[in-house]
Structure formats: C-alpha cells, structure tokens
Image (cartoon, rainbow, N blue to C red; front, side, top):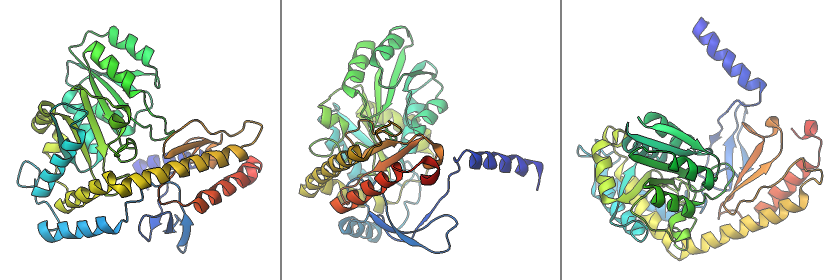
Length: 387
C-alpha cells in the first residue's frame, strides 16, 4: 500500500478508535417505520423498526406520489437533458416553482421560487451568490454543514454568533459597517430539534439592513397550519427573507427550493453557479412534488401533522418516565419531530453523545412504546453493558 493510502487508512483507524466511523446499511424495502435492512458487515437482511428517517409525514412511499412520479416519467422521460438554462427547464419545473411561489407569497412580497436538485446545492448557491466580497455572513453556531460550506464558498467574511443568542448577534451587527450583511440560520436545528428565534432574527435584519437567510429543511411541510413552514408558524413577512425549503424530507420526494423576492431569484439565476452549471433534476421529480404539495396542504396533511404531534408528546412522556435519576441521560426541550436524547458516551451514539430520534406520522403508538421500552432498558444498564 502506498504512503498516500497508508495516511488515509490511519485516519480511518483513528475514527474507529473514537467510535466515530460512519458505516452504511442497505435498505431493501421502501422508506417506512419498519424496513428490511442489511446492516454493514451483516450476512443477511433483517426487519427493523427505525427512528432515524426524515420522512416526517410518511409521504416517501405514498402511492399517490409514486403514481405522480410515473406520470411525470411518461410525460417527460427519465432525464431533463440539460441545465435549467439550456433546455432542461420543463413545464413541470415551471409549474412547481409557480406553486411554491404562491405558497410563500403571504410571507415574502413579490415572491418567486427556484428549484434545486438538493438542499445542499441550494444553500451553496444562495450564500455564494449573495455573499460577495463586500458582504459579511453572520452564521449561527449550530448551522447545518451545507450552510457552513456555502459560507466558505462565498467571498464574504464570516462571523459566527452563539446558538440562538440574539443579543450577541445584535452587537456583532451593530459593529459591522459592511454594505451587505447576511444573517444565516437553520429554522429547525437538525440535531437537537430546537426552533430558531426567527422573528427576533428578522427584527435584527430590519434594524441592521441585512438579509435573513433561513434554511427550513426540517420545518417545511411540518410547521404551520398548512405545512408551509416556519414563516407560516410565526406569521412573518418581509422582502428581506430568503427561504430555503427541502423537498426530500416531509415532502417525501427530492430536491429543494429557494423562495425570495423576485429580484433576488432573478439575481440567483444570473449568478448562482451551483444552479447555472448543473443538469436539472428529472421533470418527473417536479411532477411528483406538485402532488406532494397538494397532500401537504390538504386534509391528509393536516391529519398527519396532528398525528405527528401526538407521537412527539407520547415519546416525551415515555422517556421522561424512564430517564435515570442520576442525571446521566436527559431529554432537552424540542417541540419538533427531532428529539435529542443525551446519553454521554460516543460509543453509544455515533459521532456525538446523543441519540437523535426522528419521529414520523407513520409511526404508531405501539412503535413509540417499543422505542421507549428499549431505551428504558438500555438506560437502566451500566454503560459498558449497554454500549
């Protein structure tokens, strides 16, 4: 083995020693609470009850969306054939963007939307385009990796502000004389489920003449009476808002969108390199997403959001009852589908001392009860035996 490969192998061994090595499993069946999985290193698949999917409304295997995807493929074929600026922008893409703009119109004046293949790409596009050399990006300490990478890709100076610390951010903004300022935050933080103080952040954006870029990956489809996300839930409206919404989580399909004032969207079409220089997603994806939006805002979406809230309350009641009294594990506050159980040992939770529990409207009462029982048994054992 060459010296270069030896170096990489050594880093992988170091990750093993810290219980931080990531491993993939193979899903043999569609996304659902119970899936047949082949775990890394296993000889055979097994059926498992899962609590790690971002399919918050249980739409990922919805028959109506599968049907719409097939319809889209029949209408437009399997590929787009080019970028959005070179023949790849189909009628399905245009209709999806128009519909999303209508959804965001109550919250963003003269709203338009732009469809991206992934949320990661959307975040790279927004921050690299708006964050020019004269800009300063004020980035939340616990922002998602895609926002961090977008800020790195931008030519702007980057300043981090402490998690949900509005006062500290206010002071940083007041001390900044840059002509362009961007406040950047997740809406729902992906690991601990906290909801950002978006209303307070918007007030700072207004006071300090800044853009407010919000990544609503884990709120879109779930928050708000109609599932339109954090802006609907908080009843916010401003032309300073630039919202990124993910369509592969609660929406159950794939892709993402940016919603902003039409001038911002037009600017992104001209300057956002991750949008300009990539092949458009298959039109069938956009066609299926139109069906997903109808589900989200319809009676089924309302019912599933209600069911999800019931499962969240059930889990929190159950875990609170089985947590150890010595404080070695605890359940921080989270009103969202993401529930963080702090367990204190990397060997018990890959990457950090936390078990990230993600609930879905597809989980039943019995599913959550099984999880509570299993976690209660594990928490009652000494660390060495339970790891």
